[in-house]
Length: 498
Image 1 (tube, helix red, strand yellow):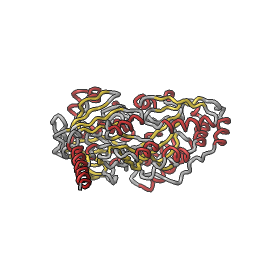
Image 2 (tube, rainbow, N blue to C red):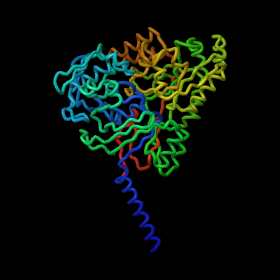
Image 3 (spheres, one colour):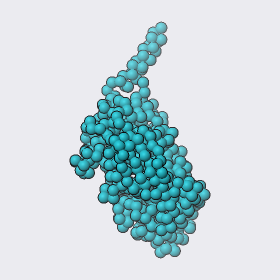
Image 4 (tube, rainbow, N blue to C red):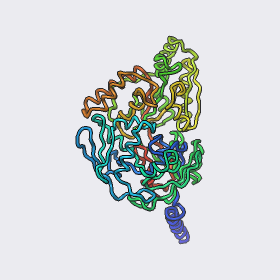
């Protein structure tokens, strides 16, 4: 009887503890990110760490559900008036966090702001097919494109709505420091390089936010992020290496959450400066990479190989373009032919990328006769150099690209189209193909053009597709959340398990 009493008491205490966890002091959610946000202005950088934070401050025009379908958010419905005009109905019950009403004018301002070349948004190439937007009533917006643009809705999924009056009053610089939107959380404090504190917006139009406070902390070291999770200092950590994720599965207080994404792990190669300006050196780098070993040894089941910069979820993906086989002898011969033996290769990286992956690739390049040196930067500086002049953009860099649009237009266009801030490469034939593919509603023609474009990239090698990436998170065992393929860390979708 005594044993049964103790057992029942233990169960009761466990249930009480679980309930207490969900209802008491845990009105705070703490998230460890690999990097600080580079910006909180949603029309500037769109890197994952920035988006993870500001996605919770702003609402988007439209969004995707967990199945990947495009669904309403600020827009309630939409229809094409003609091949170049899309009309949106806008909610009339949404207010910004200062109490002012969100109207069609704010939507129009947000669209016209991000396509304004003067803003110099790194996202511009994903929206520059839009000619203009205009409001025809307080709840109706028309978006006109320069030509028929099949990826318009897929790109608008990412458009955050900003308050026109507030941005014009404070200016772009202060708006980045003190953003204000209509989303479920409002900014309390941004301690750059340390953490961003958000507080629930009690007047949010959808429903009450699940946590009163949310902290996004910049924790570059992955072992520290995992230690924080195990010690209860963090409730959710992003970007776990495969080996660490596997080890974490045995921890009773934590869980590993993962989902295949449209994100592609790839190597960028500078085709406009340094030793990699020679296509033979770029091809040698492609032959030097043992893709399968990288995937087997370092991803350990959290990714799958690709031959191109694209994955199966995206429109335009093709499996008909062959990748480069691992052939170090061929790589050495090409390097010798190019007179590039011992050539310096600067490998740019940041804490956002798996150091073991970077070092493994470095070794592979050195093994075929190159002199590869790693330059480790903070994420903001890394992005600035990658998007800057070719002479300062490094020779190679590891990347993990996602447009969250599930369309090749959001991948190979911004990465390689002449004039893009990301592109250190130019090919007029490639430009013509991707330009045409984004200006016709004929899906058959689009697919044919993207295959030709991928074949050009295969020959010119301004980048190498490595793998389709899984998003991998470590979470408190009490946290209820289903990660999405578009990697939207939307706190409204999270809660404590009862």
